[in-house]
View (cartoon, rainbow, N blue to C red):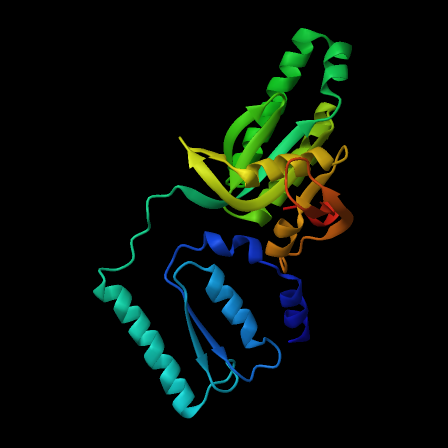
Length: 257
């Protein structure tokens, strides 16, 4: 139980609450000393259309009339959705995604050293490796940016493991890469992701060192309990992105798939 509570204390999902687009019923107890009811009110204010039910006592172990009230409310909530014809997902315009940016370090110098033809061949092998890992970890190639990639994932843990596999794999080609990841609500335009979350991911990647996979605090919080470990890289001002961001380097030794 203590381990579970410690893991919960490290999770921060505030940045992704506005991306929830399903009917939501929140149930909380007034006498919960571990998780105050204010936290439930905070969630209800930031999840579109959420309904909050506050019951007397602790929310973890309802008894008697409190349990019956809770079950009745859940039944009514589900019935209201059914009577309304069910819930239909709106036409997607914004999605919650993890974006991955990769970048070859010192590519210009490498190209000059080996020559144009050899560099094109090497870059082709690099692209093949990256695309193979994207398929393996169910990522989606969005674009190639110079000699790097922009990809999106619906799961941050798989995105991290994909980035680690790419950074490790290209070393066999004599290349050094860096990668950056961020999770946020992205806009969709003709199948491509865009918006501040994508811009943030690019800025996180720009802060990474050679051979490093760097993630935002949002990504780190979302993968709590996954077995992935991180090293704190401190706070950074990301160009064009409001506020300061705490960044973390993935421990590549602990992130093998």
